[in-house]
Amino acid sequence: QVQLVESGGGLVQDGGSLKLSCIASGIGFSVRTMGWYRQAPGKERELVATITRYGATIYADSVKGRFTISRDNAKDTLYLQMSSLKAEDTAVYYCKCLSFPDYWGQGTQVTVSS
Image 1 (tube, helix red, strand yellow):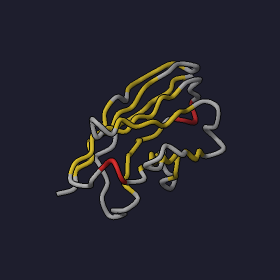
Image 2 (tube, rainbow, N blue to C red):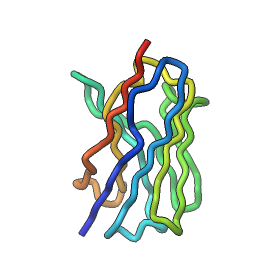
Image 3 (cartoon, one colour):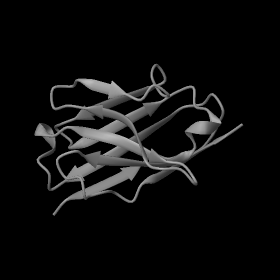
């Protein structure tokens, strides 16, 4: 059974930092490409970053230089370190295994106050 459980969201001031975590099960985590997505109120869900099993990463232009995606295969855990947060980063953040496109976690809310 595929499970993705995100955590680490919260309320932070403009310019602050947060680190999100996603514990995955049922997917063979270590061999999968994983990603973080986000959905802001009234907007479509969008890709934030991806990381392959080998650690190669891709970032959306809007977060390049501010966010870092990483993984710990021994813990089946995906991370997103977010720094220099802006109000426009406010969204619900989801992790996703690209091999299982129909499965989403419950998400974790990130709110950046200006």
